[in-house]
Length: 345
Image (tube, rainbow, N blue to C red; front, side, top):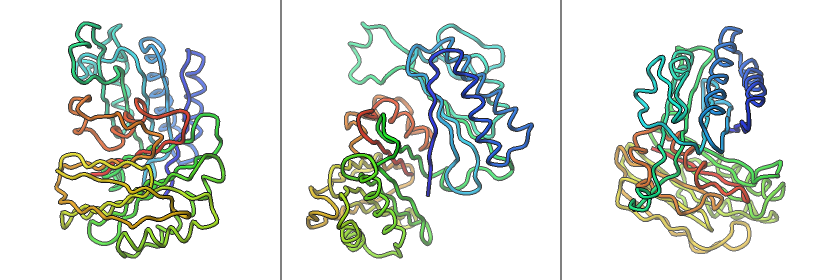
């Protein structure tokens, strides 16, 4: 499974046209009609115009294909600007304020098949000092559009959120992820981090995903051992791997190396063991926990700082897994490292 997002920074108004044209090219390649492409160009124009007008820093537009089938186009915008104090009010046509991205929401909402937003308004220094937990202020906007709008919300998009990107300056990503459903409601989910960076790390990560792709339901211990053998002769990799069986209400997790996993909404601690696949495999420990509807699993490589906490983001868990993954990458992704975060429900 591939989920590659292209990223363009909106540094000033001259970058809006480049983003609009890039998204249009991607849409045509996916089979969107001329009318649909024109609608997407309006969406990007609205996002870019308001980003330049209101946001103060980190104004990025990311776009690529949606997960799974049928394939659509996904556009994610984020900034670290002043945010929006009343999102519901901002969605009304004609609403505009100098306090944050606001104008144009009505057009974006009408011209896309899915629309989601999360915004954290800025606060005064005095108030910020009183708060026990404080997230970065700013806005994350997620929209999706399909060539055939009657075929929406495939299962992967509902259940998973994934961000995986190379470190700044690298052409290839040494991280990888894996997500596969087998029988009933059983999902095998993994984040792999090839040792180091560049092509050697990418080769190790790809060798791991190729092995995981052969999974036929065997226990995690056996799957990790086989992946370990497959990575001999490569740089090696670390891994966090989970078997989520929503139908029976069970989560199993095993990790080797510095990949972090957290289960939110259930009482369960997930620990990875020291080691490196392809070099030194410790005795694999599988954590088994009860799973329940509404719980959230996050697995991340060390390219995502471990300092994040969902408590800092009011009502964030009510959002889609992809929006959650986008926000975590915005605020906690390390540009000096490959980074991957997988969010599952």
